[in-house]
Image (cartoon, rainbow, N blue to C red):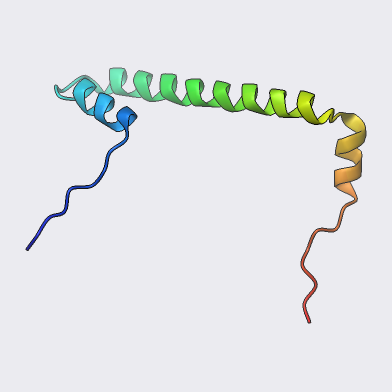
Length: 74
């Protein structure tokens, strides 16, 4: 059986270094929560920039509520 090497991202490689030794489950959970919070913050910043760029606001949300974007079936 041949095993092919897969490409890992720089984040995956860095995390592998971090997890080279066993750590308590509590620390592992803390790290997972830190990573989740970090990526959630990135998304929030990107969305805020998009809203500013597109000049979206409450009116936009109200318009979206009434849009019908489904593909019509033939």
